[in-house]
Structure formats: C-alpha cells, structure tokens
Image (cartoon, rainbow, N blue to C red; front, side):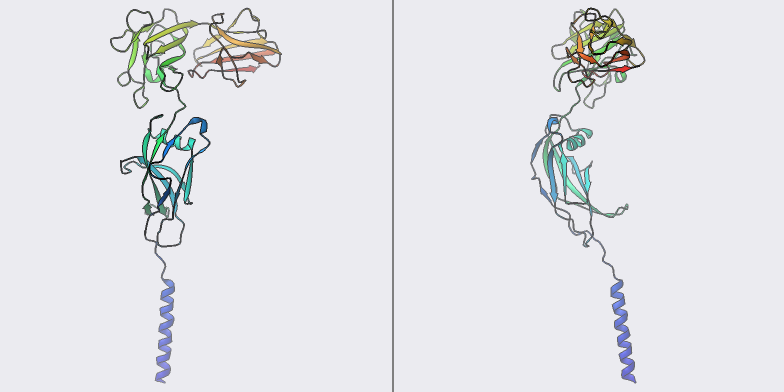
Length: 352
C-alpha cells in the first residue's frame, strides 16, 4: 500500500512539473543589434535631378537579435555626421533586411532637413530595430556608417521685390529668379508702383530686411545696383515690368510692358496686338476674345517683337520666342497669361 501511495505521489509531481514547464514563455530581451553590411562607410553619392528615378544606394543589414524568433521592424535613421544622432531623421521603415533609396527619395529627405544643395555633406546612417509598437517597445541600434552625399535642388534662387506696390513686406513680395543655381542673373515680371528694393534670403531661405542682404540704386538711377547706403529703385508709371537684376555685375533694369495676343487667329492678325488686361486680384493678364480655328497666336509686349512668348512643348508653358500656339476651333475664348512664378510662365486658353 505504501509503495502504491509513493508511486502515485511521484507521478503527480511529474505531471505538475511538466505543466509548470509548459506555462513558461520565452521573454524577448535585446541580444545584439543589426549590423549594416553595405554600402561601405565613406561611399560618395552625387545626386542628380536627371537620374531621380534611379536607385541611389541600397542599405543591407543582418537581423537584430532579440532572443526570440519574432520579426522586428527596421527604421533607417540618418543624422549630420559627428552629432551622435542628437537629432535623428527617419529615412525609411521596412520589415526586411534591406532598403533602397531612389535619388529623388534621398534628395527629398536631405533637402527637407537643411542639407545644402550642390555641397557635399557627411551623413551618419544607422538601423533602429524595434520589437513591439507600444511606447515601451524594445529597441536596438546597428553600427554607424558615414556616407558623403551631394544633394541637388530644382528650385531656382530668388530675390523678393518689396515696395509701394505691396506694402514693403519682403516675405509676401513678388519674386524674380536666376537662370540656375549659383547664377546671379535674376529676372521676372512684377507689377510696380513707385519705389521698391530687392531683398535676398538668408541662409535658411527667409526674406527679411534684417537677415538677408537688400539691394537698391546707387543714387544715379542709371541701372547701377549697390547693397549699402542704397536708394530705393523707382518707376514713374505704375504697371507690369520685366525686372532684371544681376547681383554679381551689380546692375538692374525695369522695362514697362503692355501685353497682348498676336497672330492670324486673333482680331489683329500678325500686324497688331490685341491688348490684354491686368487682373490685380489674381495677378494675371486676361482677355476674352473671338479666335479663328486652324490658325495660330502668340503673346507679345508693347506691340513689338522684342519681348514675346510661345509654347515649344504644347504643354501650357511659355518660352521666350517660342513656337506659335495653334487654335483648334473657332469660337469665343478666355485667355490667361500667368507670370507669377518667375521663369516658369504659363497660360491657358479656354473656350467659353
């Protein structure tokens, strides 16, 4: 009887012990962070707008070890080199062990976070692995590599033109733009009324009297520009002007323009422009007019050919001296000429 009792107790203990072992769950604990394998530290990437859909680089890393067989989420973080990720920038998240940046994607991240265009910057890169989504999720970081990256910008450098025409407020003033980054030949069409100046942005892109340099006339009013002790530039007639400023040569010019349409599709044919009217609210030039189908037209200033625009790409964008614009069908049209974005001039022709 005693042997039977002892055997029963022993069997019960074995069953109980087995049950306890089955109730023990594996606990995730950080073991080792992911290791960035490629690209190699020191890799140089020169980003170009003409290749924005191509792959700039692909990051590859091994798994981060949390001590359990559970998938982690990986976030690529970048930062200014040498800052110890004091201000980390998230640059892509994936459940995989790799992530590719297109040229456009990487350039967008860099541009949005203050990296200067056309200047090589050193960028630290690491991988953040996370297990769980709560605030107390487990985190591990990989090793750090450093890339040398040169971003680009598609935005043209600009000058603001504040003055009587808009209340002397640089942030809201109309702009003129240079032909390319690093160029000093600014131009654009601006409605002017009396005195005005030209204001450059500061290093952060802010247009302000007390931050960026401002330019005016040297006092002779002969098209000479200076930055210090300058006088306000001025026009004697309110109107729409082609404004050109060169901050390298320190020159400027302002040409008054009356805009119209010209061509065998228009009432004046190829001999006389049909005048457009400036809409001060929308800040565009407009005309409602009957056009002849199967014929062509262009835009020109001052009833002359010195300043004229056509459309080389049939895409609604204007080019100086561009191709004639065809009119498909006869009818009454509303035509809008938009010079608001400097060096990116547009138009619409809408049948009524």
